Structures are given as structure tokens and as C-alpha cells.
Length: 178
Image 1 (cartoon, rainbow, N blue to C red):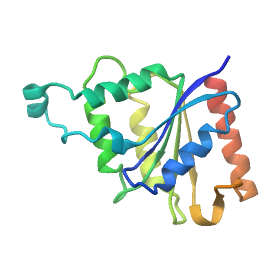
Image 2: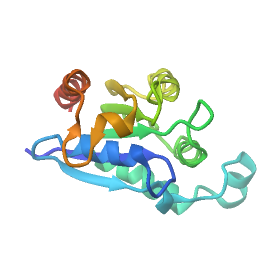
Image 3: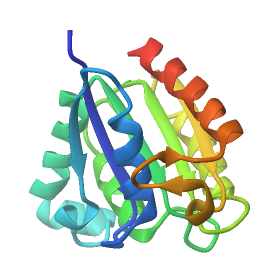
Image 4: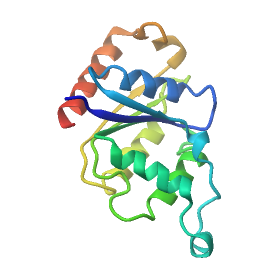
């Protein structure tokens, strides 16, 4: 039976390498029905309790949450902005977290990060793994890809054999948890 995978890069950049990485990862799952989101399609007012009290939860936040609930598993690849989440991702997470139930619907998650540099977004990935474990009951698997331009090809995927092997092991753990 086909599994529904929700995937997105946690960045608002139109040329996001994290969106490319999340897309690649989702398409490595055999027979998966992949739903790719672009955070630019979910631009909302900056979250505040005052704004929520005045106007309620935006329709776009409700739509984003429905995408989560409709999925069997989530793949998120994090862009690192000043050592943390991008503002676009954090705002969506803040709005979605105000709705009933687990923010991430207790879904299994494959959390990824990549960057042009040698740490591959490891700082933001650590933040996400540590935070998300308290935001639901789903299994969390993670992987960081350093030096995106050197280690990734859109035609071939992860070109470094060692990194490709580690990625494959993490992907298999995620698939087993679906």
C-alpha cells in the first residue's frame, strides 16, 4: 500500500537547496505518494497571541495542518538562518502549534538539513530534533548533508558514497516507522 509523504524545505528561498534535498529524499521511497509543499504558499501574518485573539488562526495555517494530518510521514529539510530555523518556517510552526492535537500529528519524521558549508545545517537540525521530540509521539530520524554543492547532484543524488550510505540507513529507519 502506498504511503503518503509530506515533504518540504523549511525555507522561503525559491532556489532552496533544502527544498531540493527534501524532494530528493521523498522520491527515494518506493511507491510513495509525495506531497511537496512550498512555504511561500503559506505566508501569513507573524504569529502573536493578540493577532490570534483578534482574527483567529489563518486559513493557510489550517490548510498546512491538514496537509500534515493527511500524511503518513513527514520529511522536512531545514535551512539554517543565523543558527536557527528560517523565519518563514518558525512562523508556520507557531501558528500550527496553536491548533488542537500534536503539532506534527504524531507522524514519523525524517528531519534533514544541508548547507553549502561543512556543518550542513547541523545546528538547526539539532534544535529541531531536540524540540520536536517534545511536540509529538512520532519517531524522529535525522541526517545532515555537508557541502551540498560538492556532495549532491540533482541527477545522481548524494554522490559521496559514505554519506549516501548513512542517508540510506536513516531513510530505511524512517520508512520502517511509517
